[in-house]
Figure 1: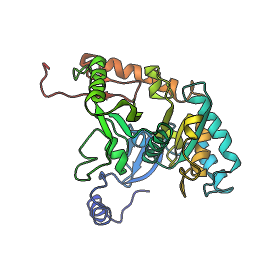
Figure 2 (figure 1 turned 60 degrees about the vertical axis):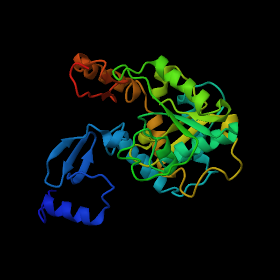
Figure 3 (figure 1 turned 180 degrees about the horizontal axis):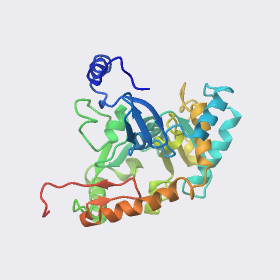
Figure 4 (figure 1 turned 30 degrees about the vertical axis):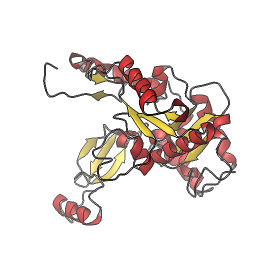
Length: 316
């Protein structure tokens, strides 16, 4: 129901007095959400094109998610590594992730936590320190994840110094005149000028997983965002011999792998990709790509989760 006790400006003032300015907010006060729609406290309806920053693959409050969360809430809520329900979601992720080798999965809470654990595991397995990431990429807001992130504002400005042995190379971009050969050349230059190749542990390259568009089978892959349908759950999956590299007690955490988040992950991963997720988004991306065709190669995708690069001069 619309809130008649105060207006938007009063609510905005109360929010500014309660939440630090570093948390980016908008003056849209959501009262409820359903599927792809939001209603604010004045009763106005909006379409959520951002899917809650890319996390709601099946929409707000999907009925299957509600059943799964409620069922686990009445069973168990505190994460434990030896619970029987871990085997099924691990097995499902092992089926979905690229590669036919033996795999193991570590469940954590956030995307940044998954990123940091992937680096810990990779360093432990290879005994190599350095990490190579692409310029312009985003990897999280913890200190090591920020070091990997290739965008200074708003993620990194004023928060340094950052951990050492993190290096960046340009990502191929036809509109930015960066070819694949140029990016590989920069990687080769990095190895010759700044990094001994024997020191490199993890190089993030950033269908069901975006990396499949590049026909790359990674040793480790991190997952978060849409895994839990809006609930916080993240994972690192990879080659079993590498995942076992960390010593006992070296991975995990008090709340790592929320049972409710894992229950929602299991619910989502059992839906048919052809009907609900990857295949549908691939098809829905086609009309968007066609609409942006006059601006190519500025428009880049895969599927509907794409981007439009802007330039200052129309003839550039």
